[in-house]
Each structure stands twice: as C-alpha cells, then as structure tokens.
Image 1 (spheres, rainbow, N blue to C red):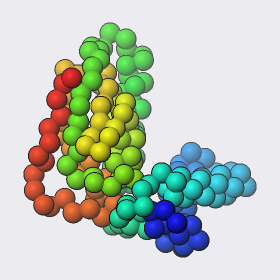
Image 2: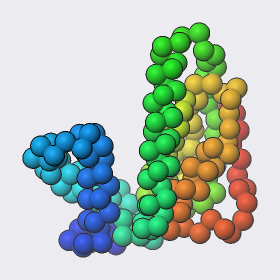
Image 3: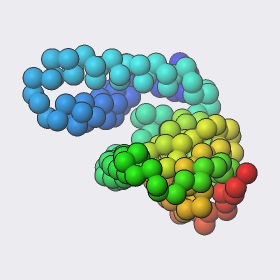
Amino acid sequence: MKAGINILSVRAWLPRLAIFAALWWLLAEGVAASWTVGAVAVLGASWLSLLLATRLAPATTATSAAGISAIGLLRFIPYFLYQSLRGGLDVARRALRPDLPVSPGFIEYRLQWLPDTGARLFFMNIISLLPGSLSVEFDADGGVVHLLNKENLDTQELRECERRVALLFGIDVASGDAQAQGGTL
C-alpha cells in the first residue's frame, strides 16, 4: 500500500468523513433532508480522497491522513472558513466594482515547512482561497502563484498559510524563522 495509508483504517477514514460532512452541512445550510444525498456524497468523497492519497503520495511520505493533527485541524477550520469568506468577498467586490485596481502578476514562492508531497499539494490548493491569489504550479521547493494585484503582495500571508497547513499536518514549525522568501518573477 502506498504512503502507508490503510484504506480500511478508521484513522484514515475519520478525518475525511468529518471534513466532508462539515463541508456538506455548510453547503446544505444545515437542512436535514439533504443528508439523503449528502451521506452518499460524503462517503464517495472520502473514498475518492483515500484513493487519490494512496495513488499520488510517494511511498516515503511520512504524513498521511492519519498524520493530520486533531488540534491542528480544529485550529485550521476557522482559518479556512475565514479565508474562504475573505476570498469570496474580494472576488465579489472586484466583480461589482470594476474600477478597483488590478495589477496581475506572478510570484515565485519557496516553501519552508512542508517537505511532504501531500502537505505541499494541500497548501498549494489552499492558496487559491486567499483573496486575489491562485496557485499555478508547484514542485518540491515551492511554486508559482498568480496574483490579481501584485502591488499589494504580502508574502507573510502566504507564509502564515503555510505555517497553518504545517501545523495541520503535525509538522514542527518552531524550528526557525522563514528562510525562503517570495519574489516577483
């Protein structure tokens, strides 16, 4: 089995079920009747998540779904919801007010705390929730991020997102200051 994930393990299923159930509950606005479809969707998403984790992660991956920190998850969920709301409001504001300044561009962002393929992939996808940003590509060292307004570049926001993802995956971030810096391409 790749990445040490046992797809029959309760430790592999529980975090996925909890995350996808919470997402369904939010999307369905808490309507109890939606669970007739939601239960199937949550189970299907959890199964697909496990399948992808076993196929995409290399065999040497130390962090898996079972390696997600419960405390890190509890701390990450409010951050995730807040950043999702911020990102959505920013896009809506720009759509409704086309006179807002837009200066698109790319930056190269180098990772500091995420050595694991799964954690890096998760982080690069989460970047797209930050207002005005979208991850374009990633590799072992970091990735390229597209910004709607490169004039308002704040690499500290990206670094904070990386730190929170590292904590979610149980990675120690107390081992030093951020060494890598983002820069404009």
